[in-house]
Image (cartoon, rainbow, N blue to C red; front, side):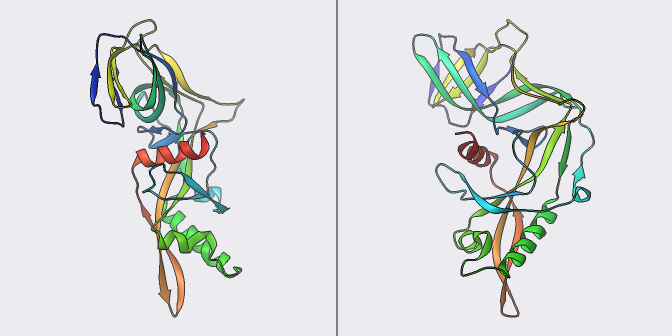
Length: 259
């Protein structure tokens, strides 16, 4: 049995019908076994700004990227991943005699994987790179501080950085039980919990290598707070690694790149 639990707290329990998952996508959902987000499109060094208190969080673009060398990347050992918890997938249910319901859900999955490796910059390295980039750009600035630093500090916003990418020869995420069998899954969508949801064994995220090259399958996303430090009368940007809920990050990524 695979258990589905949405982010929204259930207020009603719907029984007596057998809903079917008609659509599920993993774009920018969080994969707990790799601690990364499902995407093939982000690049290491990209910088964004996030207001974590927004009702509908979304990333703002920064017109600069962090430069790095391959020697600075840390590589994890090849991982043997067979299952994972996934949060933030977009799910649509077909409900007999009631129509459809859509929402965010989290659930357990099976994973088919060959040689998954995470290459990433450390959080301390990224913090130093943001500080150095600010100092370099500040020498060339006009009346506006670079990296939108004044707004980030004053409004207590966060810098969000693509700090790494997960590559693999093969990385497939599947949900459900054996083909043709019901999973009896439970899922909550829009405040309603549905029992005995039919889920077949469907590939909903499929990442395969191209020719002899590994392909990017996921992205490592890290978060940083900022403040100004005065040194000899000059303000320097101080960057500190921090955290924000994976729910907020998933929503911000999807609101920015998937809509």
